[in-house]
Length: 451
Image (cartoon, rainbow, N blue to C red; front, side):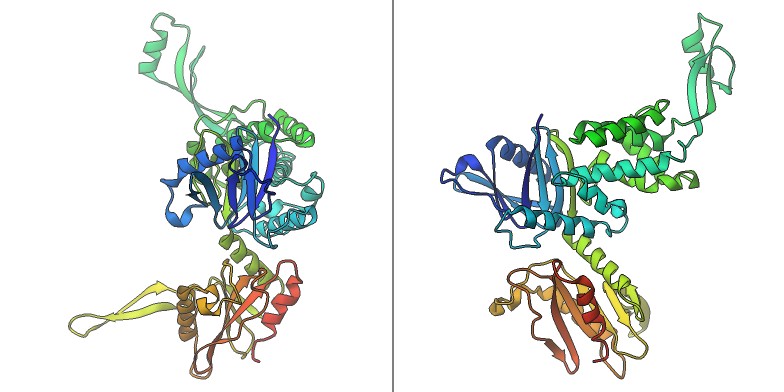
């Protein structure tokens, strides 16, 4: 079945084209899907709504009159259905009012660049070449090509083998005879023995998972180059069976030994492709693939990477755990009980010699610098959180500098006036522009220490 690719950005709305008769044009903020595709994706979302916590739901279903609609939340990635819908959900980096190819490609390029630095993921091997060699570089094809590249690297050094425990009816005594099974299978045939034995074989869980992934991707890819590469890799795995218990095999490789150290990234990819694992846990019979990620995780890890990259001369601590909100309690008798609870974990703590400490926390939320009456849409909880950081990281001599870093958007492109908590304890709210010079923006924050 021919795939049809559509695009929507975070916080966008998906509607059925059949519900509208005025020739509405799709943009990155409003997508009008053919009725078959709309019903397919609506069904998929409905199947998963009840199983997800509210905070983990990537979509909201609602209706205006009799017209069903889908609201995209802050998850990004790829969904592909068996009906041929290929839906790419992108970060809200541009205005979203246009589907001009240059803007779309730039958004996808920035997204994949950020995704490379997502912690505990295999996306580190997404390369610029993967993007440039794909026509319109569909995101799923970039993921598939990355898996292929990793598999080629691993199997160029040979397919790993290990001792595998087997039970078989064999023509000679081998290993340990299983008496009950031997009676069952060989009561009338004394020429065979039902035995349990170990055999050195490539048919191990890791290779089974990789082969199962390759066969799945062979059906998903639209790229002849990828299809050819998958066939070539499969030729190395002819003695390997497919996985009949994916969850069980994943559990085995996660507790495996150093034999599989070179397989680490490859198996992370396999887990994503075989279980649709992507910080979500979705099911659906009409799905080929669902790879979705919360943008706050991607944003947080990417900004941490940039600070580490451009921090020469500075000491950078990521997810610092030096302080607790509560250090002790007092019981009914007035006795002090030392017990630290409610650990604080600011995203980035910056120090340089005797300069003033700076604390940076990243938030993937859309602010509005023109909405003063709504406090610019800053969460009160975020304000309290930074205040707690400020008090705990203060010294007798000086308070730390506090920064909340949000993504820029058309309504938030300039630094807000500082928020003063008390005395010298102040909070700066700064936009981060992904289209701008990233190094200059990071250095601007770093060089402000001590000023």
